[in-house]
Image (cartoon, rainbow, N blue to C red; front, side, top):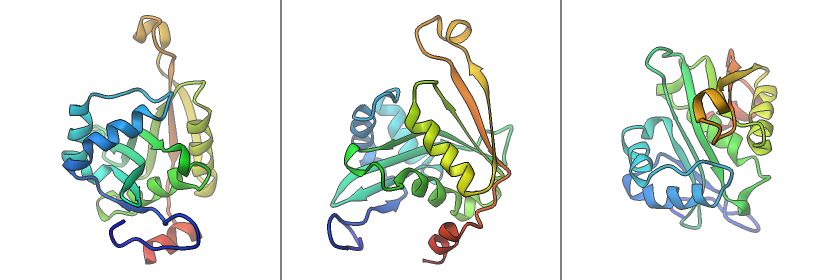
Length: 182
């Protein structure tokens, strides 16, 4: 791992911006994390290039073990929409998903973000837990409503995606302040 810190046990993950060379590994990680939808390799390459400022990955011992992709919707410049969060099975339960989100929001280009949003299907318990925990940690309100419905939008072939909005955001938690200072 480049420039990583070590403690007893596995290496502490390095969180960084993605590079074009990371696209294939990001695709592999997403495939290994059901129920996430698999994007095309081309889509993941675009996220690693055009959207690198709003994406982050976690690397441990040269392996990509975490990924978050997002973008700022043109009609809502104070919002960061999170497309996907993927954490490898070997790194679950360590708070890596929340660390990836906080790292994104602490970047200078994202400091104006007041709302974090995403969509989640009803059966994706891990995503519900992550975003509920994020809202609680940051003392923000979490709202949800159906956005893309199973029958109206997916022709019955995909579960309803609920729009989850968390805000207003203020990254003033002790964890976020400590991360920003390092």
